[in-house]
Length: 491
Image 1 (spheres, rainbow, N blue to C red):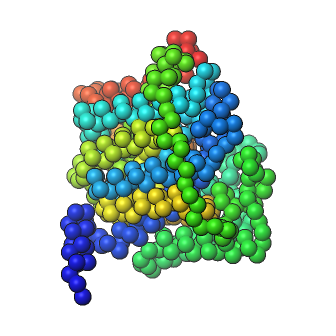
Image 2: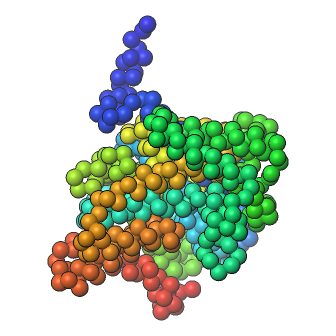
Image 3: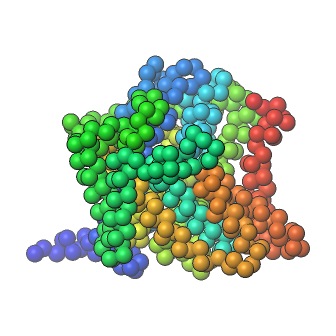
């Protein structure tokens, strides 16, 4: 037996402080793999959102006259891999990054299609927003705002995100759906669970729950893999097919979500990174005007600014890494990497990259350090070559992990003093509005604004940190952005 592996393992242990955080290399690897599988959908979903839409000139992303989804998928995985590895190495935090959902849709439908705008102009705004956030981080403003938030509101953010990812899991799996009638949501199809994919989701969820209560290590990862294998078998026998057609329209309600679980004809495919660098930093200012471009940057900035703050608190709380004030270790480094990721996503033409709450699935597997992020990042880089293999996992096999992690995060609700209305009401609004509006930013904003208003009503305005006042005011502007644009005559 040689001593080299021992020295290498010792170096990894020391660098990532694995033992100090009560973890092990095996736990970190399991956690990294689990996070990747719960996030891998973005490699397929981001191209479907931004790769299938034209800008105002009629051109698709990359300048072509037809969609090039493999190219978008390859660069999506590339940026996610590089930035997630950077998060692990620089910030030593079990947090993975990829193209932000919601933000990518806003870029595709709310920016690129504006008269005169091109994809390069739209991505330039994303780069600009990321650079501004980076400046705010380096000057300490972003971290200062974070520390100004009361601990119980931070707890509410974590709980709200737990419910948010729960509803994401339930909706993506088709367990909860939007009906044609007056009710906003319903169970399955017409109030009943129907279809083999739904059964795969239910069995995957029950399998993870049983393994968790029996303290089986790797329960979440085992559940994802087992559900995927079952899905492949079911599809091979029943030939169910996809839920949607090539345009994204639902044509088969009982079909699979996102991916049809079939063994791919090829495992390795050469990636095309031709989208890198296709952005125009200030092109939008001449295309739509300085005021309009500025408002768009502000909207992007505010959403990015607070989503990550909430996510890193939620992950830290679940991992037991927060200090007495509810702050994660290396908060400044986390925010720096996240800010660079926002700009990097725009520079690579795949929209702003941000921290993913799905990282909680890795924490649920025992991840406590940046080594898990390195593992996730490496898998994303491999996914640039292994896109056919990544596309095997359907929503129904991956989303049970999100529901289970939502439960784990919900347990933090006991840290809120529900008898103190001054914090309980803002906490309540924060928690419920995240899933009900499908927006982390909306929940955080409602909590901050209501907290400030209640303190004023109680004659305790002096107890509100000055930076929290600034933040609450910015959220008022954020919520009223459309009326403001109408008043100043911006389309």
